[in-house]
Image 1 (cartoon, rainbow, N blue to C red):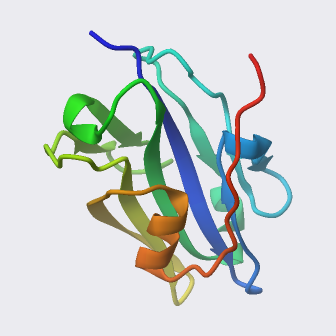
Image 2: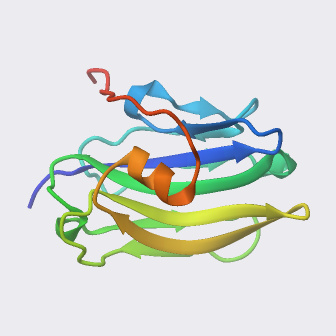
Length: 157
């Protein structure tokens, strides 16, 4: 059994065209009440079952153009083929939706989990489960976000 630091993150594009990422790496934890209306609740570095939580302020749904929820391995495992993880979505109405990250894609270090798009004022979510060999910049290129990326590190716990 290996302790894995699996990080949950979100690429966002707001209705006004602003783009960015909410992730533990670089301390980009977002803001729930101001742009980007997304925040990371915690950074679980030890693979605990409770995992990480990403909050999205659905009262500001009109501010979102698209959101891409993704996960990446920060440390502890060489690829998703060695990780048993799931991402749960808990909408305020409706049933819980779970995307299990159990596909055995060798060498994949990141996974685009779900894409949420604003279509005519309503948010629609689509399961992606697309595994990527690289990291955030590779997810960005795959979905056409166009951000500039630099190597980052986490602050000491």
